[in-house]
Image (tube, rainbow, N blue to C red; front, side, top):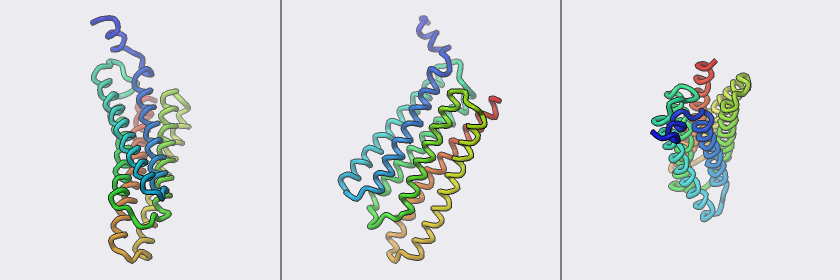
Length: 215
């Protein structure tokens, strides 16, 4: 084994995993913002381009996840438990997957009208992604644990808000929408978006597990 391979094998934790986690967190912020733009866009051609950009961003997320998994197989020293690294990577990737799924549903169904609840849900996904990025940064910089715990609480609150919006959206649909096909379309789209918000909470749970184990 040459010296480069030896150094890579024992490379410091912040030189491999955290830069990749940061890239993954940045990517879910990008893809979340693209979804927000897509659901607000009224021009079909522009919306289609935004959805294609979402698909591309999701592929980038897959590549980052693959890099993390490869690193797990080649690096001897890791910043924290290998299972937690796997879970954190998978949870971040799940956010991108669910955002893409919501965008594809939007493309497929092309609802006649976009209710305010869909836009609000997209805003919450952006907030969740941004809080995830903050948590990753604090974790990387060995930040104040109370700050990280507060971010975790904030993410949990965002998920609770998404649950409330989902329930209110359904109530509004059943009360005011007369077309059953449109009800099905909107319900499925907003359910996919709510799942993306849920995945942000999954990330928070993994981070909470990490700080419990390392303190």
